[in-house]
Image 1 (cartoon, helix red, strand yellow):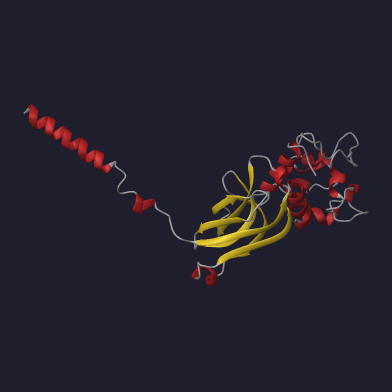
Image 2 (cartoon, rainbow, N blue to C red):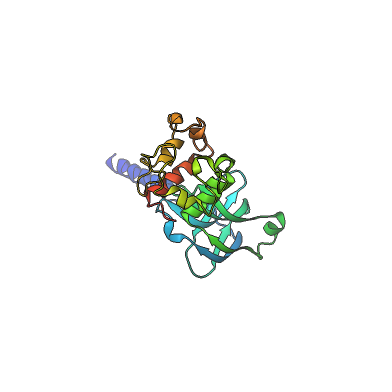
Length: 242
């Protein structure tokens, strides 16, 4: 009886070991494929302005997802090649992403067409010429200019609301270490201190009474634009560099 019990135990161990060997997994989790290849060329500046929670990448994105399918870090120097791109990709982008690989902003992109998917031998080319990928440059373009709420009132060089022009050529001087017009005891942007920067306080929910316009806290504090509010605060907290 003891011999039979020992044999049965050994047999059970062998069965469990076989099930746990991993031999059945490759077919279930393998995503390897030849895929498309993309090449990024151009002169890109502003690498040193981004804190570690962000990354400048060449990435492939699907049609309905803000998370990259595959990506590579972009650094100064030679052209960058991104390979093994899934046919599910709809765009190849020069983008800023966070640690979760979620797109924060697109700096440039190329659409992936059906013809490109069929001919995987051709390299997709993203030629960006000159791009300022700096943190403040990104804020100026995406938040201050492209978002109409800011440019509507602060998009004039001489007649901007509160004397604060957010046009690209004026924005930095109008913000950093500049006294707030509506409250001279406050500074619009205090480098390294977002919480004590009047610009952040004005845009924070619950502070609608700080200016003559009660709608400021609604500009960036919504599901779509909250990442830009975080980006603004991160820029300030990391020194508010131009």
